[in-house]
Length: 309
Image (cartoon, rainbow, N blue to C red; front, side, top):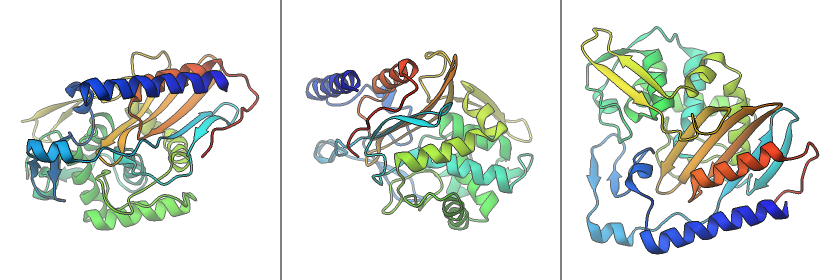
């Protein structure tokens, strides 16, 4: 555990240096998440670009990371840090959205995109009001690309409206025993009382990965999505930089908002191990994920002392 703490401390120091000299991660990293920095939007309304002075004065998320690393083969938690602290989950929310869709709807349904869904904040496919797509395509877009317009269109179709769909999400969370999780929207936008924990999200992900359709989608690097009339084709490329880079990575989901910071859930299957990693509000998402996954693959079967929660 001492070695792991040293690795995490090194990652944190590297992150701090990066912040002092660069201020932010490069634009390519930011663009892979749900909401780009410097964007403020009202729910259902168009995004508004903040001016430079407001960007400079905006607060960064507090440097509090929620972490849980679990060996799914043995059921042992290898490392945890503030795993029970409620935090903003950003687009990790879409895992629950996908579960409700998969369990309550037919993926062959044809979905008409509403004006509200088309106006969603980015990430998005840039769907247009009135376009009709298969529900399966929308599910692929929201899980692979984290497309918010696809997410809202799917949620409205299944629930009748977003609020009704969110009621289904919370009912499912309660049924699963996710006592520290509460949703206010279907896609992971920052809202008061829209929270979860690393431990709840780990439980949620284990449940989701048991669904063959969900597991097949989240390991794909891209998906081709077409409107029913075949007039438009969309390419949804993954936001998950672990796929194709870490041997055995099979998903699952990224997330980002200013309040939530950079978030990630990863599952890696290699040799005789299957690891599940949850990261909430981490500044060095990919470096931390690499370090913890490699640590987990080398870890012995016996449980280790955990970090302070």
